Image 1 (cartoon, rainbow, N blue to C red):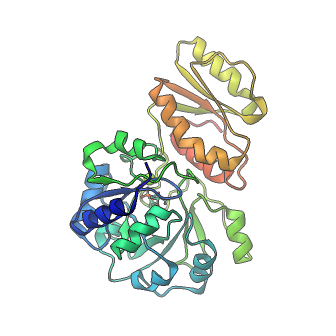
Image 2 (cartoon, rainbow, N blue to C red):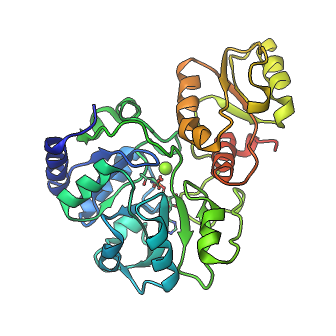
Length: 325
Ligand code: TXA
Ligand code: MG
């Protein structure tokens, strides 16, 4: 059930007392703490099993609060904030003195975003502060997109779970570094490169999974328990059936053009033709295949345009070094 006013008040109290609150955002559920409480921030790393050098995102209630948290906001950042906040865009800026080094993994920059979810915004307003929140999963695992996913993943390790229903975007925010001379995408996500470029008026570099610049951007992130193998779209069904015959319990992501074809596999997922629907469902599909006991997932990456770029990035990371395309 979606959180009501008394849940929001309770959650704000938990944050004030140094506790951890799982909160819904439009992208994925976050594991939140008071950004200005180093002990609470340290608990996030402990609960997630995340190395302390991996920086967190500070969630704030509105673009007008940006100057409270960062130094020297460049015009590009204001432009992007104005267009895309609240929304699935994270800006990396120069860290303000209010942000403890514990939240940034010791960096002099800080990642900030305004989430586009009524429950998250209500919590930020009630708490009247910044909330550091990584995705509410154990380090390296698939991000949660429902409150139940969070409970399954973290159980009692989180003090309070705010239920805001299933996440509407389904993949994490796009991270844009605006501290350098030219802005660059550090992680593709819910705001597309094309939409960013339309506002900026110039092209942005396409990120590459193999080019790791930031702590926390490891190729093995977003991984289900099952091994993920990526092949060309037209080879997915044959590869899945071959592996199934070899004795694997295969989960297969059948690409939209081949939907409806009979497939001899343990579990079949029909990939939605719409990239927005695919992004919304992606992590749920991966969790479902794990829950059904699949040990191998066969999939292909979508065309790397629009939300396809973020989906391809997450699938490649789920496949890790084992990916063939
Ligand atoms: O959609 C999202 O962004 C979700 C929701 C909860 O807001 N959060 C999320 O957080 O995905 P997390 O911690 O799973 O991923 C944050 C990423 C990390 O990979 C980290 O490398 C990057 O943001 N990051 C954070 N601070 C940074 C900084 N100062 N410089 C560069 N990258 C940074
Ligand atoms: Mg994460």
